[in-house]
Length: 212
Image (cartoon, rainbow, N blue to C red; front, side, top):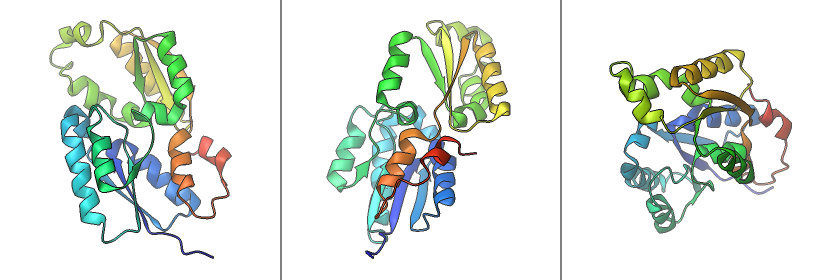
């Protein structure tokens, strides 16, 4: 049997819990995850260089380095780093599309361009990142400025958790948006991680849809 390669995932902190859960569930002991702070989404121009630093610091220690980031607002600059450093990243512009798949996300977007999306991570961090992060706790009058062009909130759920569903509904109420729930499971994130395994037998597809 061929030796399993020692693999590093350099990931956005917003994906840390999901990646770690997948590694634990499948027993992928040859995989390591290192995360950059999710707050970098507020300054996307900083993401490419921070990813480059992680890649270069790890090259001597890992056989394979993969990047679990979308473009995330870098305007193609992250892909330029990926190409220059000779590594691979998950396909897609952002984590919403990782989870739904490109076709379903396109359908959602075309049905209502004024859609605000939440993942499990964003539901858990909603008050910190959205309410306090945008200053809505201090300046509620800014709600119309930020969200006046949105119509609905769609919660893309990775796990089935009634508490998170309740919190997502509450988030929609706070923003004055209609609410919709879509269960995605781990979607393309699980596929990306599974495809890197030698001798991949695509085990656990159903479990990845129901990961809790």
